[in-house]
Image (tube, rainbow, N blue to C red):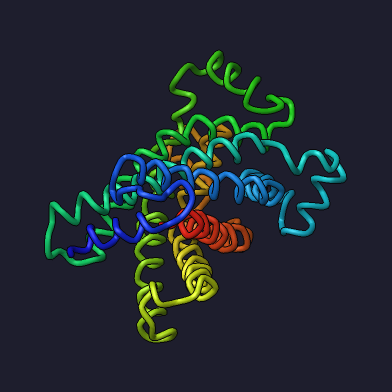
Length: 303
């Protein structure tokens, strides 16, 4: 029995909605996308207050100079509710992005493995994650455009419902994609390193630390390996993607007209370091929980 047939047989013996589901079928990819959507949407919603602070630190670093003082300023000047500005963009935008990222990653990994037999694993991981992320960011960009404005411009809009028509009225469709190139610049290297680091770390943990095949491990051991690999992969991706994240915030808030001006106004050193501590604080746990929820959903459904 080949790998695909063996995997399909294991899923067939699973429980719940995955019982009898064929691996690499449309239903399989839909379940992966649904799991990614729930995992990404829920985790990004939970860290909305820190994301509000992060974006404000990027746009106005003199006023919001550190995590604790920045939170204090926001609450003092705009009230506790200000910490939840843009929650709709976080939940729905990153939910859609997560569904595309995880579901399409599984799809492209299978496609590229078939197209490029014998290729290095890292090559397959890089190609698959990049292809998935390109599409995921096209879906995310309109939500991100509104979210950043809502979080940094209190009088702009209350959320997605009034934010979308306001952006369209002022800038047309191009307003929703003003930061698409920097989004790709931020998320492509992040996603490529995140998925590749995760896959290699999981392999290392099973081979060198746990020293068992994954299918012979308990659910706790599997999810433990998932969480550790998820945190490491999130931290690695954050450092690499930080410059582009600063550029995205500058463009959406019209602090610069284009990428070159944004780089000049922010400065090379600040591109690397501005908001990096809070991004590591944010992204490491978020990616960890995304992988945890994603793998939990796959375990519970027999995948």
